[in-house]
Image 1 (cartoon, protein in one colour):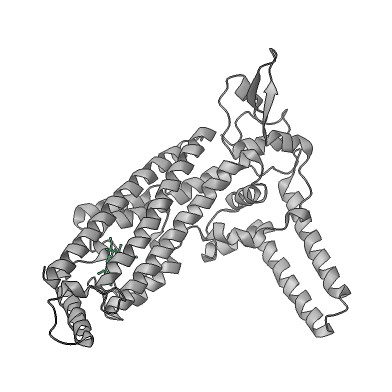
Image 2 (cartoon, helix red, strand yellow; image 1 turned 120 degrees about the vertical axis):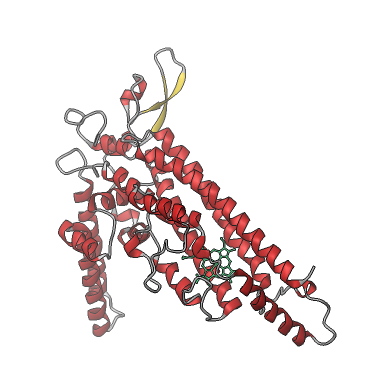
Length: 405
Ligand code: HEM
């Protein structure tokens, strides 16, 4: 087989395999979106969503690894496919030269085809929640201008629909984070714990006998700036100002709920919501990893030549890796985690409500009971998690059976 044909076969094959997996990813995403579009998300549906997101994340790993095979077409790859080149009469450096030239020749056949024409990739981005104003600009052309009219219409339509980001945000917002004035005021509890943690840190810095005074001053100043940063979480207006500036995206209420899930993730009823959020991070991170890996491959194959789609190629692709991250707020949430020992234990009534337990029934038979939701035993639909967690903390007299609905 001549080199052009070998390159052509490999390229076409890769693109087709990618597109097939993209189709599967879109199928899974659509079904997860349908789950979260419902005003009521039962616990069993969260389990389904977790299973499907796990599949997406596993597919993404294959997509990233596949680039290793594609990269063997690179003129500067250790696994450069010399066997596809007609046996050169002379030395290895000459073979490398021939291979490199052949790739660049082959590239001409690709023109004007470009990754910009993958409609399914654009749909994945939009359905996950990449906003138009967040996209890297290249020239004056819109990101859909490379697509056929019908495909572009489909991608624009996806822009206007609720994305996974939007729907998960709304789902989190429906979790009143153990609101003020109820049996357990999560926010007050957390805030007190944060202040106590900083006070303790400051005390131990000042009490240190090994630190020189300048180091103490510097560390206390650093603590003050960290306290200030936490204020952007406690003070809703500060949080909203960051959202308006584009430094944060998720609403204050959703951020609070996500933090609650993060901090109390070991409670059984919060484990699935925690898995769900973690998988969204995995998916977002895998997209970043794919973008970065693809950019590195392009750097190796094309250097800094412009792409067949007219972008700056490597530098455009590298920049998208960070800029196109979607769940940055959830990544940043770790900033606000505090050690478990700083959090006082949950009141036992709340703890009981966040746990599953096995109880003998009246006839002595043992059956699983969902302690958090007495309605479950009566055959009433179980409130979604994390809503059940929130409901658990609220005075039963004042709490509707399905909070936030
Ligand atoms: C020989 C291997 C490849 C090279 C040299 C290459 C090169 C490039 C370049 C230079 C761009 C920037 C856009 C442009 O100006 O054209 C790009 C974008 C893209 N490529 Fe590739 N590519 C390769 C293989 C693939 C494969 C197999 C896929 C799988 C579908 C793919 C998917 C994409 C996507 C989705 C974009 C758009 C990325 C974005 O806008 O964030 N590429 N590619």
